[in-house]
Structure formats: structure tokens, C-alpha cells
Image (cartoon, rainbow, N blue to C red; front, side):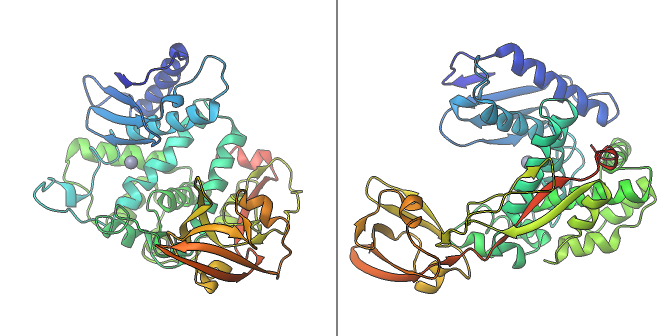
Length: 400
Ligand SMILES: [Zn+2]
């Protein structure tokens, strides 16, 4: 069901792709869909891509330009929409049927607390793109690019060192769904980091047994069919062991209850992929997947350490990242920067390109009604980001 602004689009393409995704997921969970009918309701309006899962339907919102156009020139937007469709459909099993005991039944009169959203959103986020790869909607390089992007979107911000995914899940009512300017420095997404925990679980199972996360999903769904009592807060290690014989209790405790680094480098190496780090160009840098291990040396641009948004006049500060020149100089969220070194600020990146590392710049800005100047000593970005490269295609075939 479509509503909103419906531009002319490639209906045959999206229907064929949706058919592949649904068929694949139904087979993953045993081959029989757990509903009579399923309805996708897609509202095309605004700029936000989001969805909400129900037992037999999903309500999706996407920008009007997300539908595949007939020229195939908006593939990136369309792939994001297909990722969302795949995500919400996967919830048909993972959270609408297999679900936390804390949601069984839902108490709609108050908040329902669980630490397990890293599983229910994280595993779902891991499978949404993986299913696009397994059904041929995206290729291997596109899929591995998504993995690198996810790693960098988590690890280049300080929040991942401040909060575990279990805590992020438990406090989602007051933190994740009520984000403020400081959120990148203080919280972690149980969606994205949860998907990385799921990646590790899948690779660990594949390296230690003939099973994978697929086997666990099918096992969980079969248990639900027999007795839908929900998953207790500390039950996943035992459930995974029952499905695969592999004891991952220690790993799960570390991955979900602490902020310790996970063994991505070692695990990806076992599947023929080199995960390396380099200094980021700036906080917008997100790394990429390379077909060979030689990667380009990035420019050493001076980095402010803030997320800025262009306005009719100047740039407004959205976030100031921890331990950066912007933070040390006292730049604040909502400051409106109008000049750099007494020149009207029209193109931040190009104007910063004329400044050397270690040089000071003078920013003229409005903080509420007051006009201020701030001196900031620029330094190159201290953030490390990941790059992924293919080393051994044969080993990779044990996963992808
Ligand atoms: Zn979800």
C-alpha cells in the first residue's frame, strides 16, 4: 500500500526484490510463513527513512525519491529502502514472535524494560543487509562497505567507550529515543553496535562449528512455536549453546555488558578479510572496503571536531565531539558560525583547506544573541577509522 508523493517508479523491480527478500526469510525460518497475509504500508514523504514492525504488517516512511526510478540512477536511496523493508520483515520473527520475556505480554500502561534490544534490533540489523546480499540485490563489495561503515559509525565516536549495548537497550526510553547534542559522546546505538555483536556471533559460530547464526534463529523460532514464553534476560548463551553446541557465554557478557573492544580483526582475518585502521581525515570520514590491501593515503586536513550544518548565513553547530579542538576551544551546540578568519563562512571545507595543521583560526559566531570570537588551534583528526580489504576470497566464501 503506497501513500504520499508517488513519482513514476520501477514497480516490477521493487516487487521482484521484495519477493526475493520475503521468500528468503520465510525459508530461513523453516519455510512456512507464520501469518495468513502480510501488508507493507509505505508512506512516501519527508526526509526520514524509518519503520515500525507489527505481527502481520509494517508501516514504513521514506523520502519520495527512495522508490527505484526507471533510469536506475538512485540506486543508493533504493538500496536503503530495501534494507528497511528487509529489516521490518525480519521482525516478523525476531521480536514479534521470538521476543523478550519482558514483552510477554506487553504492558501497554508503562515502559517495558529489557537489556535484550541489542539482540532484537542488532541481529535484525545484521540480517537486513545480509539478506540483500544473499538474494543478489547487493553485491559482495557493497555488503562489505556496509560492514565498514557500521564499524566506523560506532567506533569513531566516544559513546562506544561510555555505554554498553545492554545499558543502551535498558535506557532506550530516556536516552536513545531522547537524544541531545551530546549523545555521540555519551551513548552507543544498540542497533548498529548490536549488528556488530551479531556479526561476531555469526563468525564465531562458523569458525567453531558447522553451525551459524542461521541455525540459532531457526532454533529460537521452533522453541517459540512449541512454547511462546519469551527469552529471559540472561538466556541467550544457553539458547545458542543448545542450537550449536558452542559456549559463547563469556563472549556475550563482554560484548554486551562492557565497552571492551571486540575481536573484529581476528575474526574477519579467519574469513579472508584484513581489517586495518588509519587516522580519519575528519569526523565525517567513514572508511571503505577495498578489493586490494593497498589503500590511498588520506589528506591531513585540519579537523574541527564538530558536526556543522550549513544555513542561509554560515553554519550551525549540531554536535561537538569529545577530545577535539572544537571542544577544547569551547565551541557549543547551536552556535551559529558566520566567519572564519574574518572572512564570511560560505564553504567550510574549502576555507579550512587553506589552513595548515597546528595553525589557529578565529571563528566569529552568534551564541544566542551575543556575537563572540573563538580561537581554535586546528590539529589533524585523532580518530582512527577502519578500512577493510579482501585478502583471501576462498576463506571469505565460508561466510559470504
Ligand atoms: Zn527494528
